[in-house]
Length: 607
Image (cartoon, rainbow, N blue to C red; front, side, top):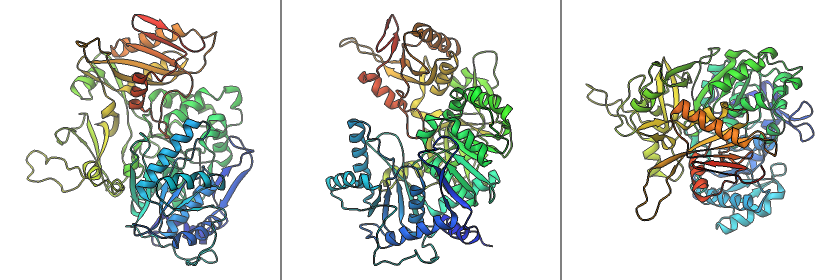
């Protein structure tokens, strides 16, 4: 049987061959985060809902586009999934969007601002949202000078367009058509829509299916947000392509009760899960041993870790803590990817043990080379395997000269292959700069290969046959002529004392001292704590942080700020937003419970 042309065609095939098999199940509000009731859709019902809503989408006006763009402004759940597949089957372009956080007036304003920016950027023909948000969405759209149709996913209405609700109409999607606009997380002032085609999606999910050995009869379980690439493509598109059953809860459910994730893995015998490093760390720190009784993780073959730096300490602790409950250490799979390459770029070979490489920190920082440790300070590189597919090339390139680096040399990670997206929507100059890079020809070669590459903005190195991610170019900290990678400092902070859990190492400008003030940078650390109050020794925590960073990295910190949970800025996928952290530091927006600065100590909040 021929391979489906698109993900929509794969869903149609599963609807015919395994209509009653669970496609997607979400924990209901009464059972979230724990075992209990789920709202589930079989493959037949999921396809039926997609066709019903898709019939409405097919009749939408296309405005300035060749096909309708549809913004999905729904919370995580089965409606989000069915709405996404409605877009795919109708050959409409799905635009993913962060659901609103309206707990405060400030959060509401931020939501409205980003929504208005995205509406102006892509000019959608429709927005799919719950009824309680329709009035707010209409107000923002009117202010943006747009008039999209606003649809309820459960009652989309009827149109004069072709109806697919009563039959099994073939999906309209074509491989070369745009399937998805994935807006990157980060600064709200400049959202960029990554253009992902149906062919991009198929290439990436096919690679995952091949690498992980997934297929019908297996289950996946997770809690990632669907407006982020790792959740939507890793935990929805990939399992649906493979014909698996997906059992999900929401990020809020996970944070409220991380044990629920582990119980779902146990109950469903899931073979695959995706999570960022902090998810596995949370399962270690927030699930007491006396509550782990009954867990059985022996069915879990692949626990992918990505979306943020993978920390050896987390991998080792999770494997050790959950080995008594059947977890196979070889199941942990560090991976590297980004939205601009659809999702996954590289991952470990199936059932290969995670590889940690100790290298000289001095050589890595000064010479930008990965070398065996020589007795001086060490750094640990995490192997993220090889490219996901044979036709995907990963090159390490000098970001200034575009000359390829030799194995063992640090440079920017460049990616070329069928998973690389088509660029940023409506931004030809940015697209040419980021997606159209060409390395300089190798020495002795007359011309280059002719391939274009995606510039990821990440630093990496090939070491012992594996891609190792070193850090973000823009986040590198330079101290006394040596490059330091902030995630290394953050890992040191989080392991030096039980209290720090989520740290950010920031390089901030030295304060000016009058007209003759000096420039330069100073290094500060902000970190969230597991606990705070009268019985917490903040001085001891700050001292432990300062001593560990000085001893392991040779950096005397200028300040340490101890914060309440949730205060370190992060993207929707959990990555530290270090540039935003620098801005908040300079603006004095952090509200520490205690703070140490060189030459003085001050406390704020409750001690």
